Amino acid sequence: MAHCTGRHEREVAERKRRLLAPLSGTVLEIGPGTGANFPYYAHGIRWIGIEPNPFMREYLEQAAHKAGIEADLRSGFADSLDLADGSVDAVVGTLVFCSVDDVAAALREIRRVLKPGGRFVFLEHVAAASETSTRRWQDRLARFWGIFADGCQPNRETWRAIEAAGFRELQLEHFRVPLPVIGPHIAGVAIK
Image (cartoon, rainbow, N blue to C red):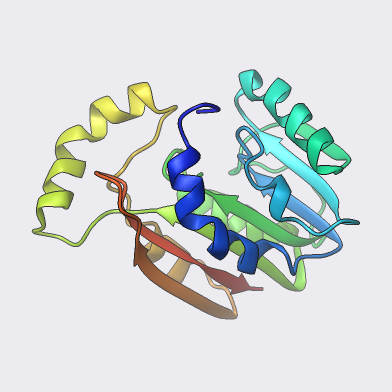
């Protein structure tokens, strides 16, 4: 993951900048992976990362140091956050919901830890439209894809779960990145 996401990062960089740069206060990032989002955050945020994969720690620490962010890195899972109710200003999830075991539980946890008016900011690859060749390939590859891509399921309709999660306001955009299998994407902000 640390060495093969460069093309994707170039394709989504401007969207990430628009989504992440305005965040302030305490920012919780779920599944930060190798730390690809650090360059987009404003200086002065209090960053907490919940990462289930222990092999990412070294990459995260290096990326945080390079970006000048003091990282509070914790082990854990998105569907069971060890944080107090209403304790964070923003939650960030990028390319993480494809591999979360219980998406609905993770979204409940995000709402729980957000302060009133807090923002859940997301950018995810998602399932293609039904009956398209991309969707057929996503469905065929799903079982094997997860083995090689840290649990990733390329055919998840993540936007449906976010729409059903009970946020007060939702801004959601569907777009496409020119990559095979994982081209369909969503990005947006959900406000508690």
